[in-house]
Length: 81
Image (tube, rainbow, N blue to C red; front, side, top):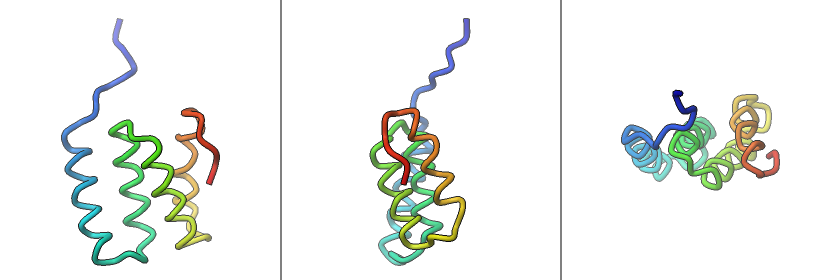
């Protein structure tokens, strides 16, 4: 039987590193926080994912994708942004 759980990918760690570098130069960019949130989620780093999703929604409260990034974390016991 194939498992639905997968180990973190090296590409998630690389994406997190690269988005972190980009954020250092553009701290007001909600898209970067939203994308890093997705990479954190892919790596199983749920608390980091929700923190970045929340930051994205604060920076761009009308950007639906920021709130979309919050939804997967609900299943992990975290609250909605």
